[in-house]
Length: 372
View (cartoon, rainbow, N blue to C red):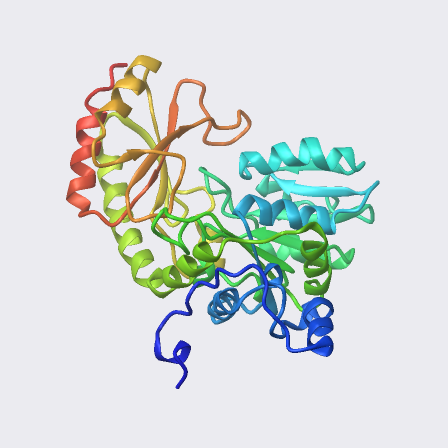
């Protein structure tokens, strides 16, 4: 066995460029990037990024994946590679806010019309996707409120018009949803969340169908997309514990939902695998498991919200989620959403690996700070 074969995780490759034995090998390394041969220029991929791709393909039935510098860079790369000028790109509402900002600024510069519709519309309407649509982009469940698209209806309509469908699959992870089984063409992951799992890396992954892969791969090569060697190494390690972490965090989140539901200071609890969620039936239809993310609403003034957030000690006030530490952050809900009320404050909680009674105790102290 080689040194690499003797250890459970491929090491990080920190070199920027390999050396070649001659002209033939030199030309192959620069030109044959779609076949992932070695040695090749490291921006095109390393043995560690290939190990990450292999781990991903065990759960998602894509063809090949491409690693980028962040989850957002993976998303914007796919949008720029697939959206066509003078056409329309359809997004479901509730997507990650920076993606919406990118669509309304950068994509519009390329004469791309960006249409944002609710997940409910995408699940029922027959005229949103048409001959002028070049791409459908989904985040399902959506950020914070976890709206779910009826994939069979939406993807069936996209197939009718020959339109590729992309999904941000970070929430479900590859373990709980395989987009390719339903005809989705590209699955994107922010490995900074559950795949990495320890809040210590920023990395994006684009998993592609065989048909779409050459187009995306060519674009990433031409645009200089790359990744850090240490980050991809940490993501490979994170994949090894993804299953056990998700199980623990999902179980803890269920207990926390029960606690929050019984707390008089909490107005509503929003979690897609809860029978009270508005898209619970769609969650059961498409997803094989859940995670530790939930949202809830409270009736309070700004001063009370500030006092509540200051009361947290072990729970971190942070935008990140999916790590081993529990985090919480307020968010604004769109006014036309069924859960919306202008009276309430909304917060997203990402449950970590702490003992669940510790998390509940922190929530109890913080919620006691609320004055209506």
